Structures are given as C-alpha cells and as structure tokens.
Amino acid sequence: MPEFKRIQDFTFAALPPKDWDEAKNGPCASVFMRLEQHEHGPMMAYALEFLPDELELLKAGEPLIFRIAGSHPLLMSLEFGDHSYTAWKESQK
Image (tube, rainbow, N blue to C red; front, side):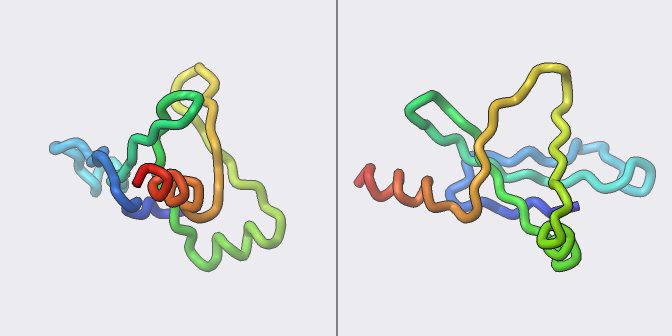
C-alpha cells in the first residue's frame, strides 16, 4: 500500500490512537493533511508516496482503488505533484 507522505504546509495530523497496539491491530499510519480553500469550497489535501513495485503495477495498467469509509460518496480531485497549491500560494502574495 502506498505510504502517506508529509505534505508541504500541513495544517494538522491524524495520528494513531494513543492505545493503538500495532502487534494486535496491524499498522496505523499518521496522515498529515492541509486544509485548502478552493473556489468551490474547502478541501483537505494529503500526499501518497508509491513504492517501486507499486509504480510498476500502475505502469502496467493496474487500477488504483480508493475505498471510502461510510456510505456517502466522496468528491475528490487527484493530481500528480502539488502544482495547483503552489500556484494558488504564489497568487496570494
């Protein structure tokens, strides 16, 4: 599974629960997120870093499956790199 990467200018972190037992429950990643304001409203951004074997699967055409907890559809935006945030940050100067 891709690992979460610490995103530039993160606003907060979702950390494993204090009583998390990795030996019993398995790994629980810390997710560093950034709150962004877009023309259509607020969005949360986080970054994934793929391992070399995962990149090979993507290159071979394997789909990347997102599973969302709960039963409400999630609107999302995907991009490679952080170009839209960087452009927005420059426009705010």
